[in-house]
Image (tube, rainbow over the protein chains, first blue to last red):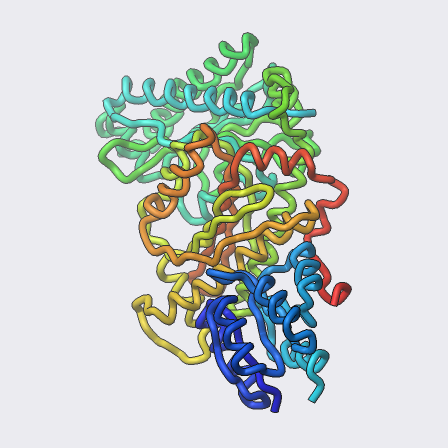
Length: 119
Length: 405
């Protein structure tokens, strides 16, 4: 089972993602901001990070940039409410591997993960 | 054609002073003390005019046609129950005689609205003729005229004044619905056409973008909660900054506030009345809470929904303008409407005297549910953003992630 780190400042959204993923994935942790996301990634080196963009302290694009710079083979899917083309381009530049916009249904999340981390 | 902030202010002020004059006439005749609380000018879809009046309340009042430098219709309306107090003040016992009651309303309406229209003519240095008053009684927004049929524009400017009866929780309303072309020509004539001028076409396109943003926010609500939600209204209003909090009333609301930066910067609120907040939060949660009170879990759900609705709304601006609009994580708000908006308006008021407000409403027929989005952008930055707006791109509000990834 792929190991997944969930980074989202919303407890509601973390719970929702956990419910969607826990059947087929190993959720190794949940964090609330970009700083914690980078720290936990370095400790656990999960197969995949589901990364929100708008988070306090440090946003998801900056966190993705750091993770992908230090771990080029890591996998990050932006999982965000932001549907702006300029933001998507920033995410591409930071190295994100996928992008899903909230609200989402389970199939679209699973499909995005399959594209990035085939089982 | 362009209008500027100065001419918007002048015309808004004219409507405000006209409403004050009308109110003074009423006080003189009835002894009822009242004040003009809010006057605002809105750009709104013709079919949405008066949406805030709802569908059920019964109104009585008078309607006039006017013609000259400005052409259109204006109405003065009271809720039916309130009109009784006015009739009794004018003609004690008058409510017992329906014909007398109608005649009283018609006469006071005539005097009030003559003062309203004459003030406009005087200021504009021109003449505006008006028809004799017609007595009207209808429900909700049907009390308002549809606007001149000859006018081909989908969006129209509407002047709305709310007059508050002192010491009572009741209001009267004056609506002025001028024909689009003569009004905008007059506004352009009375403006400076300087650097703060806004092409009206762009303002209308921006309004259309906001309607699209509201539709997307409604879709998000529906997808997350299962509540079938419809986008109802989107309008841009212009008013003095000190009038902004008055529009939010004293009813308690729950929702989120974010500050957005980019072009433009400002604040955005997603608000629900308490019952709607509970209804939608229950729809979001996998487990039935079955609670009449707003719990922490409800609030967490509302916070995330507010976040998603905010993005759905401002993303369209960013995509059309081809730039990014950042926003802070949502802050949960739970207070009286005025108390929620007060600090935000005060913050904007440090740099500007007037505010453009973007208001959208979402409703559902099935349940008691209503949600509102209010955006309060920095005035100068909004003007700059409108200046940069390519009207031909105004429908390109959605980005395609699959194309980039």
